[in-house]
Image (cartoon, rainbow, N blue to C red; front, side, top):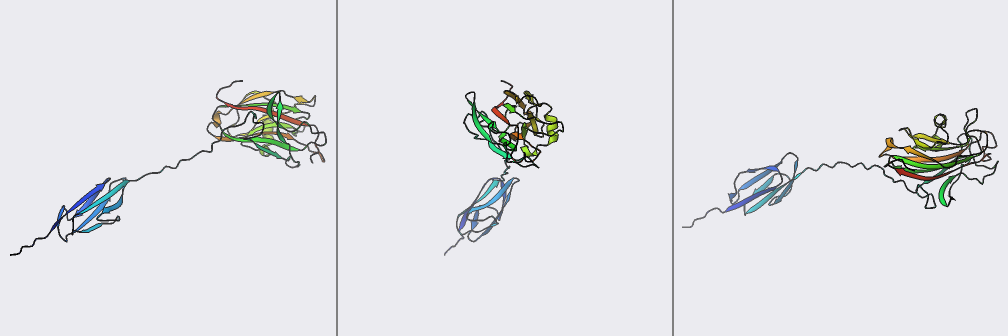
Length: 294
């Protein structure tokens, strides 16, 4: 008598990660030819990535048992990527100009709006055995002085509360006449280029001409300092003055500091780079600091 029996095969099902597996029919041992179906449902926060072993892909797994077989279901957690916003960051550099150049600074010049001109030069010179920045040029002669502005600017991130600036204005021209017209001025502004500063701002800021000590700029930026010759008397030499800008309202922000000198003329042909009465400015020791100090 010959006796035949169906072979039995073992199905091993494993999983990686969190989820639920459903098997039809259930069990681990099956006779030859038995069809087994597996489905996968991920837990909250998890994703089913697929099968490996006797099945592949991520759809339902269909197996015909004709040998011992192993199937693995893999689940992975969702990953949430939070975009990182990187603020523009720039460190204030070369504020003492001891590189002997305008490294880190942008040199700007332009005409007097409405009247023209080619603007004033910027340079590095030696004063008292130390490099300083100079806006304008004392070598200009009456009737040959360029009209417009000369400026330097730098973009930097405010890390310390105070910004120290030393300046010296030498001017042969008045800063403003009785008709409220502005002539030669030294100005500093935040986030506003020289040609964008308005006379409305000057009317307010220039009331404190050639300031020293602490200044608190408006949080909106604009003109923050005004210097020049206050009257028609002797030529003005302010000597070295020091201001401390309180930038507490700007902490963590990236700003643009502009330092500019103006030569203005209102009567032709003087405003065509044939200006009279020269003005120039020295600038030094632009230093960020946490506390006030000399």
